[in-house]
Length: 267
Image 1: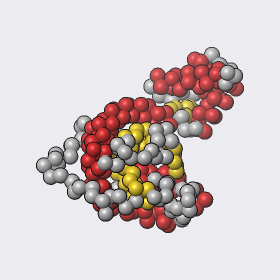
Image 2: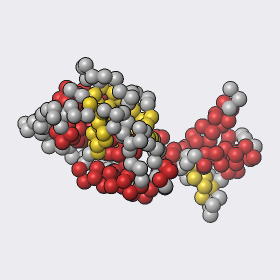
Image 3: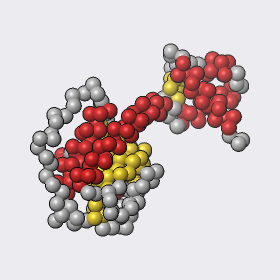
Image 4: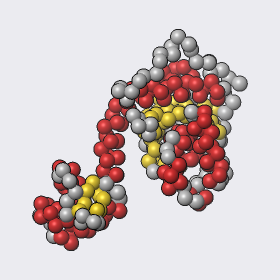
């Protein structure tokens, strides 16, 4: 594995910056790691380009970047997120009789991390480990709607950024913005046939303590085999339960078990 030494040096560099209380000059990094300055500058450039290191030109120092923070934050939230969401998704499937899943946002894609399949329902393309363009999925739209507009603009700078399947999905930035505005207003997002013809989905975001979307809870059902409004109530409630579970310091939603959500009856 010819790249293993470079990978090892990159990880050692990140661990060094993590241990240090303040940003470091390149010369000190090279000295502490026992690397030539040329190799150190090359590593710093690669890590800076990927967002793991930030350069402070005025101080001539380097510190950890946003990507390093996101990586550490992902570990701290994904494990509790998984086991909390698993139970909630099982209950969601029991209540709606449709397949449910949990997805996270990764750049302009969604990555499916949990799938809870309902008995007798067909397998879906949204299996664990699958990535899909965020703007085509209800999960992606729900999370994009909870992001700052500037971040959405950075992900979709032009119409060419919008991938479509089956000639479905938002065809312009105007359409995408309208869909996100509706999702923000309703508290959930919907898609019908964007991913798979004949199937629709509804999703709601899971928010962390700063109201940042860390995931989305969704159900997928055959088009016409359910009331989207009733299903959305179940999905929003499930997303709120997961959000409360990963944010114990926040006020939990008032118990709603005494007032059942509308039944997910076929149309």
